[in-house]
Amino acid sequence: MNDRSSTSAGWFVDIDPADVEAATEAIREETAEVPRNWPAEAVEAGFADDEADYYAKLRESTVESTREAVREREAADDQQLKHSIRAMDDCNRTANELAERLAEWAGTVDPDAGTGVEYARALARGEADDDIAEPVIGSLAERVADLADEADDLREFVDRQTPAVAPNLSALSDPVLAARLIALAGGLEELAKKPSGTVQVLGAEDALFAHLRGHAPSPKHGIIYTHDAVRGTHPENRGSAARAVAGKLSIAARVDHYSGELKPELEAELAERIETIQARTTDEDAGTDGGAADE
Image (cartoon, rainbow, N blue to C red):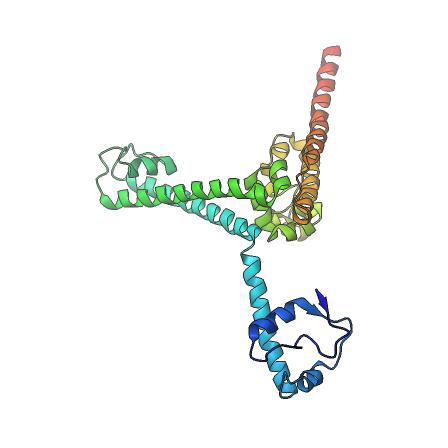
């Protein structure tokens, strides 16, 4: 960022008053260490007719600068992941809901009608029972199949893109879970700034708010429950596993955001920690079995 503290004018120096694009760039790029009487200097430099004109031009430039920053932010790779994972979930949810409706409807004309998305796909391909002759039912089946196919395509996009955006997050969990965490946080930068305790309960906001109101116990985990290390740990030790996973995921997010360098040691450290946690249950079971044998 350029420092204009030594000049006699501010961001508006050498800018055509009618050139909003140049003014926008100056607003975003220039800075000064100390404030000055910028309206007066803008008038003196010929950039503005008077103080009111200066503030009008400043407002126009700052609004456009904000719009440009938003456009750039929304085009960022992590934001594309956020939208794709949400779209995938929407497609899956809608396909499953419509598949249930389709099964109920098809069941009224065929007692042997199937259920689920795969039945809808079979019906759309003409592989289901010929007893269902109502065209509108077949049309609904095609819509369900299309939505399910779209969800599959979006998952392939997520699987392909996430490792490029967040290599360490993807390696520690999987591309879909990494994308979900990024989406829940609002972006990779936002995720990188969150403490591990917050990462641990992302996706469990309802349970967390219920706990804060005194209506429920504190949640042990949110979406990271789908992580193999958490889901595969005995319930008694699942909280410890969730903390360990969240801690490493937080570090991974920071590395991905600030450097993007792949660090395989994070995965090895997490595996070692989870192995220690899961061994607790094994040791306890062995002690219990041994005690029973002695008796």
